[in-house]
Length: 392
Image 1 (cartoon, rainbow, N blue to C red):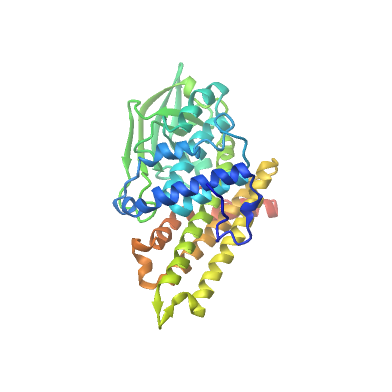
Image 2: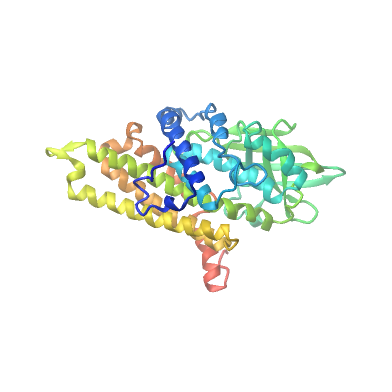
């Protein structure tokens, strides 16, 4: 498959990828545009996830790029970022599925698991044989997860007994395992557990009535005396700092996904501007429409530049929490503005699924909030700037 830079990558950041990485991007782009994009409006409207895409996604290795145990070739964080952009450019729900499977669930095992746990789970998750979810957020604990977790893990011999509840857990209606984060009843520290969803006392109930990421299968989870053997406790997850180390890695890829959502909406608006005729000519020939599109492109270009830089820092081992936090806060804010401008280009047609922009417009709201709201990420950056924490 021949690689061509996206027109929306106005400064050609993709040109820095290796030839092997470019080939992988071209192959993934072709699959997503021909087989995934045409079906997503229907799945989004029905609030269903197209499970048939999972094996093909696995064949394109998008659930193994981040982790050395399963990656098909050595690749950069910048490349992984462009993979996230490509997924979200076609559909944010598919991107979120991969982000949960690859980033949060597999990431938790890779970062916080033992070598034996990595060897057991990551290869099966990379192929899609085992699907994962990530259970941190609770009904009464979102931004304050570091202190406010109410799910409790109590040691009982060679087992742990989990009691509590989780909310907004993506993939949880069909996952085979869920990474559950809970406070140790003895020392009060947060620990992680690989919980098979078939375990007695584990229940996942789909959340209905969403207006964003409708194809993502979010669930409420209840844990009633769920028994987990010690061998399924993440060996290197001993405090919330370990949980945060997973989120730091995935937060930067959420920034990349936000760019992808903005790109998807922008490209749909550009296509529409070339076809829609008003006042005797395509609307793309009107100055006001060009102004909106240029604002979109400026937001996208600035966001890609920030994402490339923060990923380069990750490759060099220089990325800190405040770096990924700034990228997430900035890029999701610019994404929100960009999808609004793109919707404006389409006028009334911007609110129907036929033209794609409406889906990106709605889905942007979820990315704006998950993996740290703009406010929480600004506080992480603000602490770095001033040396003072202002969280409470």
